[in-house]
Amino acid sequence: MKITLTVNNECREFEITPGESLLELLRSAGYKSVKKGCGSGDCGACTVILNDHAVTSCLVFAAKADGGSVITAEGLEHDGKLHPIQEAFLEEGAVQCGYCTPGMEMATLDLLTHNPKPSTDEIKEALSGNLCRCTGYVKQVKAVKSAAKKMSGGSL
Amino acid sequence: MSRSQLMDYARPSSLDEAHALLRKCGKTARIIGGGIDLARFLPADVTTLIDISKLGLSYVEERPVAIAIGAATTFAQLLGDRTISRVLGGVIGQMLRKVGSPLLRNLATVGGTIVSAHSWSDVIPLFIALNAQVVLHDKEAEPIPLSDLYGSRALLTGSIVREVVIPVPSAGCAAAFQKFGRTELDIALVNCACAVEIHSGKCATARIAVGGTPYLATRLPEAENALLGAALSLETIDKAARVARNTTVVADDRRASADYRRQLIYVLIKRCLLEISEKPEEG
Image 1 (cartoon, chains in turn brown, purple):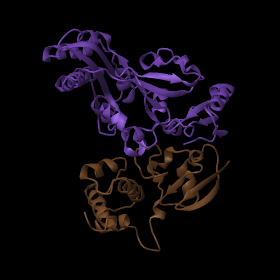
Image 2 (cartoon, each protein chain N blue to C red; image 1 turned 90 degrees about the vertical axis):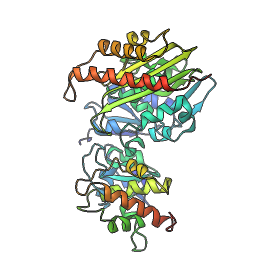
Image 3 (cartoon, rainbow over the protein chains, first blue to last red; image 1 turned 60 degrees about the horizontal axis):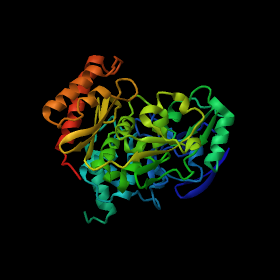
Image 4 (cartoon, rainbow over the protein chains, first blue to last red; image 1 turned 45 degrees about the vertical axis):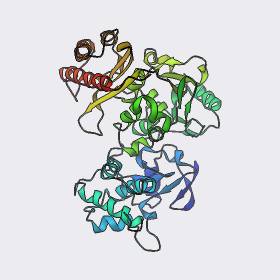
């Protein structure tokens, strides 16, 4: 079956099978920032923004996303420049092996889009579906705070 | 993950159309809302999914005597809804914040939860305590009390859950929810919900439901009776919690022993009732 999907602001058509997940579709279309981890919604490595909300793409049927809009980590960069969220993750050392990073960044994007000045608890809650097995979570929380500051023009 | 058996992902343009297709396909079709459960585990005989998530079933409506929640409403939408946050001190939101991660709450729907009927569901015991009614598309005039729905699974076969209706609580009603899991994100080892109506200092009605036992959530009539007509004192609360511990059917599974679950039931029901007793009486 055919579906239409806007990925990172680019409208594209995809030929899919009815059982295909959004994760499988995105990876096979070259969006390799979207990682496969557990395949059951527990780890968050496959997190993307679907229609303005962060979701685990392993649990979304690609057919369900038809007509929708998806953002992956590939869509964060602008004119070859890193997004403030990416900068903040780098600067705070919130990236070690990097497998969880794109998912964390997508969860962060969802949070900061809807809540530009989150509290520490709100940040922890927003990242609670994204597991990191390298660094722990302190640096990611710092990175989200730093990103919030950058995105608001340093006024926090 | 093998879902290659799927032949069709249908996106009907109306509930009638969805229902007709469901009738035609019988056991080989499933209704899909958020799709979390079906993505994780697709029964071997299912070859058709029927998506009802874009048929206008995402809503919370305040009606004269009830609050209606459309079947395709996600947990995240409920968490952001003002009407829901006002019901009984925001108890529905307090419960939902303990369900999975925000990533899953952006997908999980109320209808999907009702139909999946997981024994560990946090939504089901609270909705049973709140006397929720389930409206099926083809039996609009006869809402089914959620507490009766699972007695006869046949009720759900070939039907589509359209909405869940929660009666507006009367003045003097208070509710609480408690869950215990190994971690914040894990499913409940035991969960419980209590809704108590207090008039002139005495319990006029009580609804207590326990889930994760590890059986599907159920009401505890004996524990409810222990509250009726009494003031919600520490003694009454302790008595009701003990009755709950002694009358709930529990079992061992790989997550917890039956004995541990009994102890949890006692503690969690006590916590719920204490919380309710500390709420000021309204009305």
